[in-house]
Amino acid sequence: MTQAFCYWFTGLSGAGKSTIAGELVPLLRERGENPFILDGDVLRQGLCRDLGFSEADRTENQRRVAEVAAILLQAGVSPIVAFISPLANAREEARRIVGTERFFEIYINTPLDVAEARDPKGLYKKVRAGLISEFTGISSPFEAPERADCVVPTVDRTPYECARQIVDELGGGKKERN
Ligand code: ADP
Image (cartoon, rainbow, N blue to C red):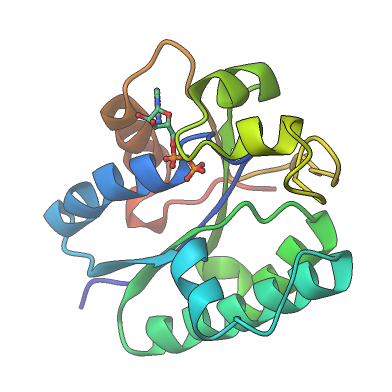
């Protein structure tokens, strides 16, 4: 049976997490995996709708998502977690909950000025207008991973190229992490 893995993305808003997650799905299917995208916005509307954006709430948000990811893995599904996931400690807790041998931390590495120029949801504009507080990268910290399993630069690359890199480096679970 093909194994399942957790593809845990981290990166700024507008970095490209959702877009690359969408490109990754068919590539994982080609490898025989059964991927499913856990989208931050969707979970915040339901399972996590009682949570805000304070550090404590962001940590709890990630803990719940990690528990959902662990359940999906038990069902043979590969969760692709497309959340900002800004806090290193919370990502480490997610790794513990999911199980380190099946957890891939993937850094969608887009500089803030590029993410802000893309502004796919118009959020940066609202932040600059003072309409949103505690926004990651501007008024709330983003702790970039120091030892991600895969670092994916997005500038001058297509989303497909980024997804291809992830599968080439991690697909099949051939981890070379020490
Ligand atoms: P996030 O989920 O990280 O908030 P989105 O995927 O919603 O980000 O938005 C990223 C935006 O950047 C999209 O408009 C996408 O078309 C654009 N983009 C440009 N180059 C890339 C790339 N190499 N990978 C992903 N997205 C890219």
